[in-house]
Amino acid sequence: MAKFRCKNCNYQFARELDMPPKSCPNCGQIEVLRREQSASELLDDSE
Ligand SMILES: [Zn+2]
Image 1 (cartoon, protein in one colour):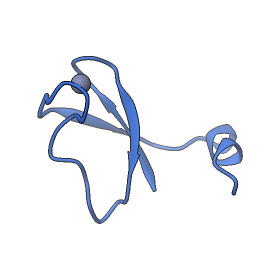
Image 2: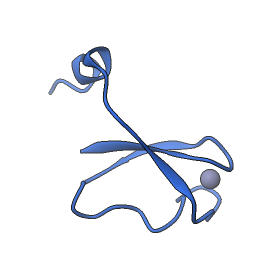
Image 3: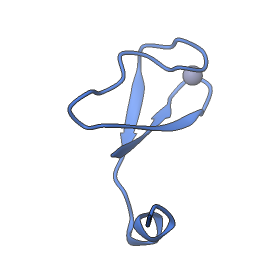
């Protein structure tokens, strides 16, 4: 999974890397930024 953040509304969500989002699921903005995961975020995502 990779984390993405909408440039328009700042909504954050996760998607599989091989299925990147075409647009923000919150506002529909097309330009969505991918966020690299930091070590602390990886810890948060531990299953
Ligand atoms: Zn958005």
